[in-house]
Structures are given as C-alpha cells and as structure tokens.
Image (tube, rainbow, N blue to C red; front, side, top):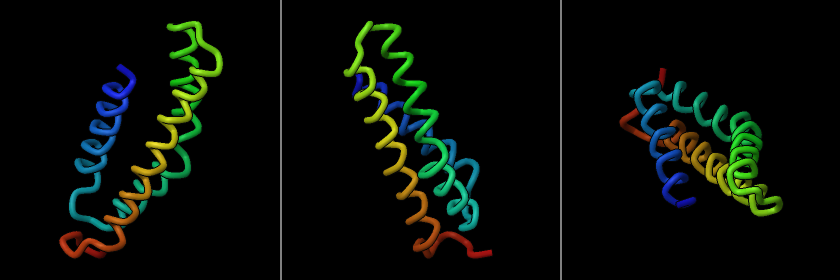
Length: 92
C-alpha cells in the first residue's frame, strides 16, 4: 500500500509540474529547486504524522515519511536536470 501511495504522489507531482512548467526552462528549474529543497521537510512531517495516527507506529512512521521525502528530493533533481539539459525546453 505504501508503494502505491508513493507512486501516486510522485505521478501527481510530476503531472502538476509538467502543467505548470510547460516548455519553459526557468519554470522547470524553479520547480526543481522548490521540489528538491523546500518541499521534502513538510512532506516528511505530513506523511509521518498521517502514518503515525493511522497505524500507531513510531519509528516506522518516521521511516515512511523519510522515504516520501527522499523520493521528493530525487524528483526535484530530475526536474532540475530537465530544466538545465533538455533541448526541447525553451531557454528564456
């Protein structure tokens, strides 16, 4: 179940950034920085608190939140890579 929630979360995040950024490289770069450096901390605490209240787990809830935060960081670096290297994306 955890992997399904993680896959849906990453898919929704990627879809939202694709809609927002379009073909503009500076938007991909800004979305990458926000996703890689700003979003993981709230995601970690949000998923940690949700998992702890639903399951009653302690350390496992923290690990689940950390997994979601790490996936968010990796996704943010992918957005940065797209913004800096893609030839289809317009550089404005």
